[in-house]
Image 1 (cartoon, rainbow, N blue to C red):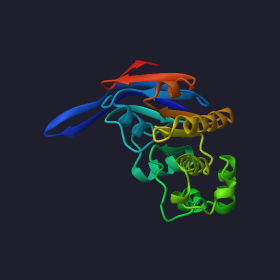
Image 2 (image 1 turned 30 degrees about the vertical axis):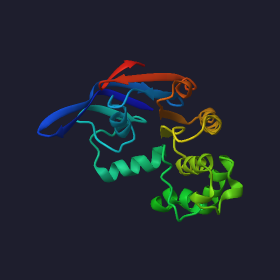
Image 3 (image 1 turned 90 degrees about the horizontal axis):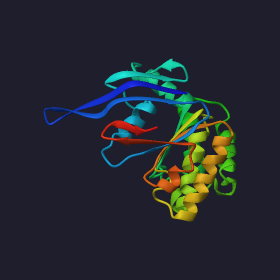
Image 4 (image 1 turned 45 degrees about the vertical axis):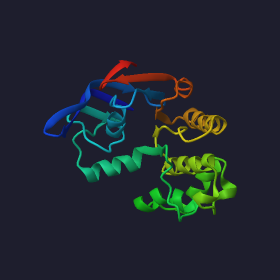
Length: 219
């Protein structure tokens, strides 16, 4: 699913070049569940942005599902993201004035997919929120809001889910429920790459990749 070779990311800051990622080789198999850990400033966010086709590497090659994406134009990358990738964020990133249904529908509306309402309903039922489709984010608990975010991530039926601290804003019991949902998605064949600072959460994945100073310490 993911093949990174010699990946470097260099930012120009204050007249100097700063290497956020310093030469990473990483392969993640189709259907694998991987956790990425590392301290602040380790380069894991830059790496995840590259994996998610949100940013280009400065050097190196990246193949996603067998297709080179490291030098694609932005419009082509947007099409790749919409086809292959679902995103789940720590802060949920839901539209406050929209219902759960409307939030989940958005990726389908952007892509012009047919049957958006029914597919959004099915996604919300998959995450156990079929009874909350008309509620807005301020009417939902933190765990429910994260489930809406996961429904939005899976509504396009992606083969890869990227999750950035998905339990970071949740209590331990609610977080355990979210991890249970990720395990169910993984069991259905979805590839999951998850950034987390919590080792207990990371250990629930099949493999932990540890990053420090822009390099992989353990894969």
